[in-house]
Length: 526
Ligand code: SF4
Image (cartoon, rainbow, N blue to C red; front, side, top):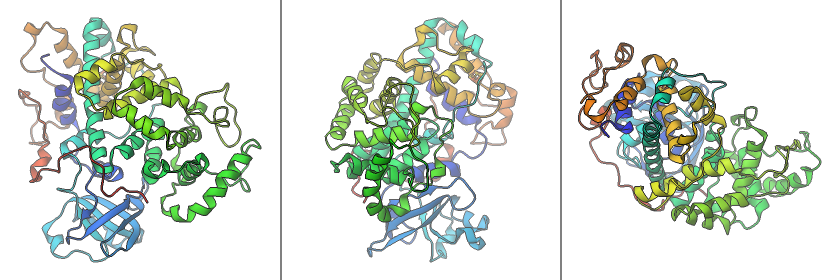
């Protein structure tokens, strides 16, 4: 294959990104995921053990609220965290005199400026993440460079949809599956980083919660999974205990004395509150604000209440080790059986505490979601080589055409569904990857997209293909030609191999720690 999807993305999409490659938002995501060594070392050489990275604050003020860590003297500290690219950004942004930043206890940045290292503020601990990441920075930049996609209200056919549909079906399938392989490698890289940072069980738990959150509630579900570690839940045989902790920390346990709840929900709530009112004082700093959850845009079957019930069921002390084992051994049938078995007498019929009824009895995790979780949870953590995994994935059933896949089909094919010959699991994931990499990379993405050139190249017989790809459109060349030389106005010819390191990494002198499937000696739980 002359031009692989991976190579094309690295050469074009990454290069076209406006702004610095290592942005604050990427550093925030790394902090949110806690993808670094724990304990962390401050600029003064003190070891701090992080217990909770804090709640991601998307409003004005510090980036993370109510984080907690402990110091070697045994003291626990709680407060806010501010993230920057450089240590000098604290003063440059005027935080020193801003009252909103008075609760900041950690200032985290990629690099320390020598001037600040000489006179560090005493009240705020300073941490440079250089040399302390759990995975290579290039990998993390590649994984997090785009903001999490949110399902758009509507979608229309994009510029290349006729070119895509005019390709031979086998050629189109080849491109999509190539993009699917790229997506799979990205997910496995993230899984490896998470396993290295948090241990296998917790990494699978986070991926499962993230997958159950869909794009709308991915972030609150990830926060919930971090705040309530599965190592703790899977030691609780009482399902009500597990559920009370999850609903309580999620901030989704209503007070029936002040909120209207269904009479059918009353006895369940009473039991949950019996546990939660005793436990809640020790979880105060981790309780998520209810405003974090997006309720309006989710279908009743996918309501966060039902998904949390699924997490409470799957974290059962007998079920959880079975689930992790099925993931590790890539046993898809067993994995699906466990997901399908998740059930609850109230939540199988209801969408919320107000007693909204579902049209019919419904599994806590429907078939479509279970099939999607094969790729989101099982494939990234399966302990087998890539070829075996590809052969296994080829046998997996595909899901339906709802949600993001529908939007991708509308944009890339002008149809609300994928053509029948493209319905392989890997092709479907590839479709989502192209949609994320190209169509949703920016507003008016079609105007400067290199995909039409890519398709022209791929549609030629191998002997007629250009040794270098077609020149990008003038608009895209003008946007950001080359992160190495920002004054250049045209893209240089592609090198023979894709650049696997970011130019930004020239500032990284040391190699990050090796990744291994080891358990974190300092799990972030209680
Ligand atoms: S953004 Fe690119 S890949 Fe997406 S529809 Fe437009 S031309 Fe095609």
